[in-house]
Length: 152
Picture 1: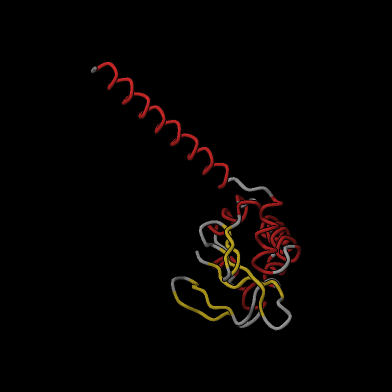
Picture 2: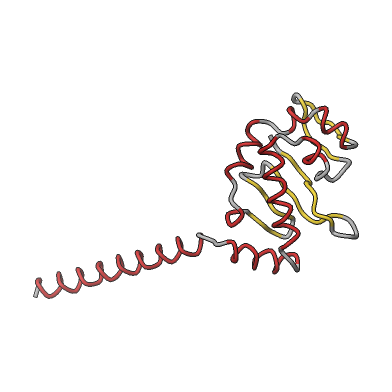
C-alpha cells in the first residue's frame, strides 16, 4: 500500500511542478513585448501610438547626440526639477539648455540609451523611460507629446 501512496504523491508533485513551470513560462512570455504590443498598449491608453513612438525615437536620438536644443524643445514648460540638489522651476528652453548637464545627467542619458521601445512602461499618467528617469505624455488641449518629468 505504501508504494501506491508514494506513486500518488509523486504524481501529484510532478503535476504541481509541471503546472508551475507552465505558469512561469506563460508569465515570461507575457512580460516580453514586441513593438506591436507596445503600439497596441499606447493605442488603448491614448487613442494612438504614432506620436508617442515618434517622440521616443527623436528623444533617444537627441540625447545620444547631445542635442541640447532638441531635448529642450521636447519639454513641457514651466518644468520643475532639481539642479545641484535644489528644487527649481525651469521656465523656458534657454534655461533648460543652460542647466542641461545638471538635468540630463549621466544616469538619465544611460537610461535613455538602454531603453527599447517595446520595453517602455506606460499607464494613464504617461510613458516612463528606465526606472522613471524620464516621463513623457500628451499635454495641453492639442495633446502635444512632451517631457513632463526628469528624475535624476
